Length: 204
Figure 1 (tube, rainbow, N blue to C red):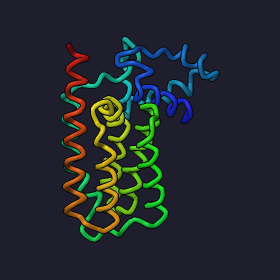
Figure 2: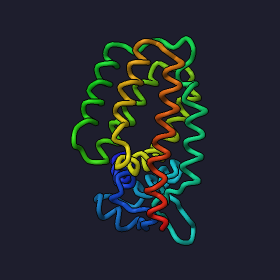
Figure 3: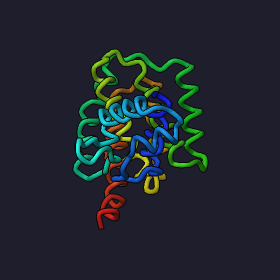
Figure 4: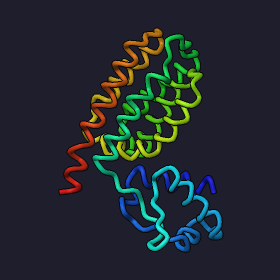
């Protein structure tokens, strides 16, 4: 079940499963070589994450990104991210810093969208790992997969994203909360701006 969910999540985020595509339980069960039960449960979890919409009459379809949803997601992140770096947050451990540097190096390479998006999510999760506000972390985690759809769409217009990652890591390393919040806010706003033309082009 988890493997099914992870694979479908990856395919939705990288666009292999296009927005609005219908997901048939029988076809998925055949594809994964399982019974209908684990497929049904995976789709329910994806529906809970917002990546799939289940309608009792039309069945399951892939999430359709929109400017309205993007703005809502970015507004929520702008409100929640400062809570993930409280005033007395501890600095990242050497292990976290090393892994974060590795992820920045990976994202600088010529890799596919799915790999870049997964590395980006792991990078941000790492930086939040010292946060003690578990409710804020839970809320941010709830947004991560849905946000991944938009991050994947924005990559084409985000050549500067990794520069911001490096600046953000440096601010975290030195415990500079104002800089962390400033760079994070800019990072979110630029991702939003990069997504807008892509979504407008799709709508057009």
